[in-house]
Length: 349
Image (cartoon, rainbow, N blue to C red; front, side):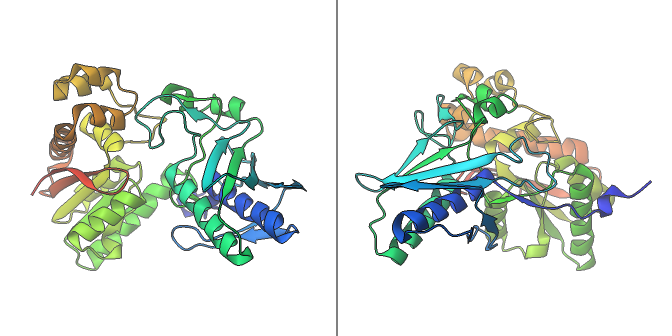
């Protein structure tokens, strides 16, 4: 039998990265007068992928570009979808619009306000950046309407958690790094194990596992940890913690947003949205705020209950770590952050 953990899996690009590339290509046509066959964008961590154009249309006052999403070896529901952006002049500033197949936010608790297109903050920032770049290049004012659509997106969204989260009519345009990491449990967990091995071999006594790039940056800055102390835990808290029990270091920090850390506090060690969910009734009991039971997301629960909830979630997660993984004598601490990377809850030494 082959060893799946040794197979190099191909990365892909998020819907947000595709939308950004389409925005750039469409602006080049709108202001420069001609389409380019492919465009290059710079992602938040410095990668510069090239995106060929799958659709290119224009007329007086507008330009439209489609990019076919390539999710690499990840079994992403949007793999192969066409991410289409239409740009046209606005009355002032940048205006984001949801076209066909892109959802609209209908419930609170998400990072985008109710009534807004379901285009997440980092993709918006990426599109704003290319708008500013192209406006400077062509000597234009950055006053543009950006409409994002995904043909067939409404049907694809039914295979996601969007309807439950109150995103109506289609998909979300997502991505915090622009990169889709192949979802192979075995390969990812193996990479976590190798990171622990490297840290121990270098004599590190403090490592940190975080759920994403924002929490990783916050925890690393808080403790001044070197890069190789940062374990790419993602959703695989159990894969990291079980290995650390057998290959311990003196101290382990676990960091993440309130949603995933709430799952950890409630006993889950696989934090992926498809395999664990927040129990809002239990969360309401924990913080003694009945309205939390009706929350749509952990973020909304935090907005309802306030700062004490984040502290209680951190304490609950720490209790789970000590209960389930305390035999190795490791000192644990937990950091809960908001979407901007601000610490909102902390437990441990």
